Image (cartoon, rainbow, N blue to C red):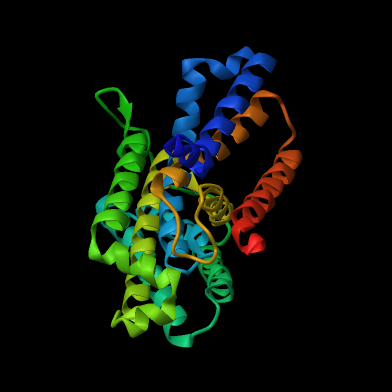
Length: 312
């Protein structure tokens, strides 16, 4: 009986119920929602968001945040396309684009850990830096990959889209990292109480830099999937992803205070956003109103995640 009470109190169980209820209601309003093709499309649409949300979750759990991961991703996409359009081999362009995201994550980690400033403000500033660089490189023009490098975004393995496989693998690896490695346990400890973690002998700055760099690497992977799927990009291609990733992570039970959160919860948060977005498209809700709904979801999620603090 106690086990049942614990299950009912879990945010993941609550999220699952919300997703099912929304799906049933939308299916009644429009039967096209519940078709296998549409549900398959929903999962494909959330793959890039799913990958980048894992990066955001790792940072939030360690007590950090990165509002620049969307622009970081956009910068990588722009660099890949620019190099490709200038005759550089796709392999080198892809590797360079990926490494740029890793470098951006490393730079964020260095500034956040050494400056002792709020990561929210630092990464907000870096968001402008990376977006500005993407604009400078692209000159605000549409860039194309020239029809190459389709496998990561549009390929299939035994009938399963490659992006779906990638997001599942990233989620499993993130779960393993947090649950079964010393690295994972230490970033959870830093997020739970940074001072105590420091007094326990943990190299807090080193783990912060490593975590931001890892986040940059995951964002770079998301950029490869995105540019491979789209084939052409603008500088603002990643502009909405940081906010959505933050929303999905908070909805999934990760808190701003750090030290708490599960990959399953985060994954369900991503699915909920994907289902809501698809439902609004199916029900012909205007894109302006969809933005309002997304904002409301974020505010509600933040308030709900802070209920324990309010009670205490």
